[in-house]
Each structure stands twice: as structure tokens, then as C-alpha cells.
Amino acid sequence: MAQDSEKADLLRNEREGVYWQPFTANRLLRANMEPRTLVSAKGAYYTTSEGNKVFDTLSGLWCTPLGHAHPRIVEAVRKQAETLDFAPCFQLTHPGAISLAERIADLAPQGMNHVFFANSGSEAVDTALKVALGYHRIKGAGNRFRMIGRERGYHGVGFGGMSVGGIVSNRKMFAAGMMPGVDHLRHTYEPRHMAFTRGQPTWGTHRAEDLVRLVALHDASTIAAVIVEPVQGSTGVIVPPVGYLQRLREICTANGILLIFDEVITGFGRMGENFGAQRFGVTPDIITFAKAVTNGIVPMGGVIVTDEIYNTFMTGPENAIEFCHGYTYSGHPMAAAVGHVVLDVMREEGLVARVRELEPVLEDAVHSLKDLDVIADIRNIGLTAGIDFKPVEGKPGARGLALFEAGLRNGLLLRCTGDTVSFGPPFISTAQELRDMVSTLRKLITQVG
Image (tube, rainbow, N blue to C red):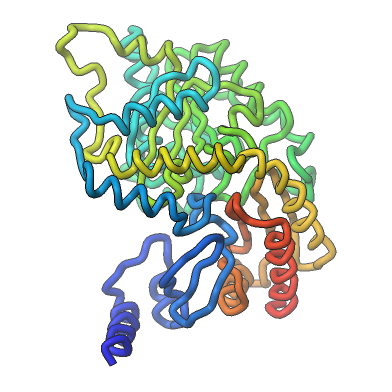
């Protein structure tokens, strides 16, 4: 009886909006009370309040590559809570943060040996922007204040991240709070030239020359940094053209501009390498990370910087704080403990290499849907894929929403943004699970129409 009462309270509270849900059409949710409460998770599957088992097609929100309830992570959380549940890292530290920073630096591209911890991707991005501004100021170039982002880029929801981000719906309500002096590169996605590409498209490298235009417009002496995602994830898996990132690196280097890779999604194996920087053979000056570093269990994010940047900050009076920035939970002991186990499991189970093995399986599976008339484009790289659906006339996003709800009833937790479905399944998935995922999706597309 108590359980029924608890369930009734949950439904009533959801209807009344007691919990104001993030990135959610809350009124639509309350008007359409389809079962969508997750109550448990194990391995690559969630279980809904109705008892339906659904395959986690996006690793939570790109953040649980080891799946759910991994026994070693569960034990690490318990043990750390009993040992050191919190420790301030302002003027103090603890062994977990020190050793995790070292391990992350060891995974990063050569010459990137310094890690600053935050608690999320949004905080990591704002930290990176501050590092870039501080670096130039210390170098005597405080006039370098401009930031260059990219159209369709997603860099979190802090005011800095929204400012350099290029997703209009995330920006328009908060325009009055945007950072000044921000400009954007054109995005690289042109379906008429690259639709249904497997891996990196060969068209679009020239879009990097847009940075030359912005340098000429603003003058390089005013530009602090360029920030891009190696693969644009939240906008629907936009894969960089061959040579594009290399050309951005060349232009930044030639003009004294820092290059920031936002690797919140691509970091820690998603591209079949430790970081996207290594997959694409380009070393930035700053990398942001979050999500997979703790398998989504305890929030953690951070930035990795080059020796040059770190050493530049280590100047001035020895008793002075070199970088006036940080968070109460930076380097949190619980997050650090989980981070160590995540890296242990990835190494011992060879999960980064496994991504490379699963990449062609996912690629072949998703591209097998090309024959369906309602599909406008399919693209993939690493263990990621994006599918664009042709919108229902006069009802953009309706097809995506219908697929999402049909998925919940038929064993798939889909990530639909408008009429785009993004995939980033757990690294622990089997090849058959990926094939079954796409086979089920084909049936759903046929049902939804």
C-alpha cells in the first residue's frame, strides 16, 4: 500500500511540476503522462517504473560508457565515503586528486601535463575560457579578449559556454548576459555535400578558412582563443572534415591564438583513443573533459593545459594565488575515487580498443537504414552516430518525439533532439546489442511513419 501511495505522489508531483525538469518540455510532459520514470539500471540497460527494460543508446547523456552499477565503482563509492567523504582543495589537497590528475595527464597528448578539476562540462568550459584570458594577460597581451566559437557548437550552459556556443535555442533567452567580443565560425555541416558519409567527410576542409576571415576582421591581437568540439555531439554528431582541425591548429599557431578542444563528449575513449585530439592527430593548448571520467556516477570535470600555459601562470609573488578560480567541489574525493576505478576498468578491459572494434559494427548497422524514405542523413565516427529524419510537414520535432516515446515502450531509450537521433552506446555493449538496437529502431520508424 505504501508503494502505491508513493507512486501516486510521484505522478501527482510530476503533473504539478514540483520538479522543474532541465531541457524538458515540461507542459508537454505533464499533458502526456507516458511512463518515463527510470527506477533502476544495470549494465547497458535502464528499467522504467512500468518494469520495461530499455537499452541505453546514449550512455546516459554520453557519460556512462562502462554501463550502470559496475560493482567496482559501487565498492569504490562505499569505501571512499567511509574514508574521506569530502576534503577542501583550497590550500589543501588529498591523494586521490593528485594521483588522478597525474593519470589523466598521462593519457593526454604529449606536453599537456597539468590538470585543473571542476565539476561538470559547463564548469570546465568556463574554466578554460578563464585560463585563456589569464594566460594572455600575464603575457602582457590583455587586449586579447575575444573568443571564437562555432555555429551549432555546444559548450554547456554557463554564460561563458553559452556565449561561445552556437545553438540558437540555448542562447536567445539569455542574450543580455552573453560575454562581449564573441564571434563564431561557420559550422561544417552541409548535407548536400556529405550526406550518408561514413567517418570523416572529404568535403568541408575549407570551412577552417573562416577563421582567417575572423582574424582579418577583428585583428589577431584581440583574439584570445578558439573553442571547438572535435566532434560536435549535442547538435547531432557532426564529424569534422578531413584536415579541418589540422588547419584550425595552423591558423591559431600562426596568430598566437590558443586552441581549446571541448572533449566533454569525445574524451576518455569515445573516439577509440583517449581523446579526440589523438584520434584526429591535432594537439590543442587546452582540453576540457567531464562525463566519462567518472562514468557519470559522481559529477567531475576539468581542463588539461600545456606546460607553457601552466608555467606562465606560475609567476609573481610566491605567496600569491596564481589563478583566482575554483569550486568547492573541485577534485572531490568521491569523484577522484570513482575516476581511478573508471580508468582502471578501461585499461584492464581494453575498452578504448573495444570502441575501435565496435565502430564498424555501429557504422554498418546505422547505415543499413539508408533505404528508409523518412531518413535525410546518417553519419558516424568512433562509437557515435547521428540520424536526421525528414520533419513531418508543419510539425518539426514531432517525428523525433514519437520515436522517443515508442522507444520507451519497445526497449530503447533514445536521445532525440528535434528530428535528430544521436547514438553513443556504452563501450560494454556487444556487437549483437548494437545490431538489435538498430533493428528495433527500424521497426519503430515503420510504426511511427
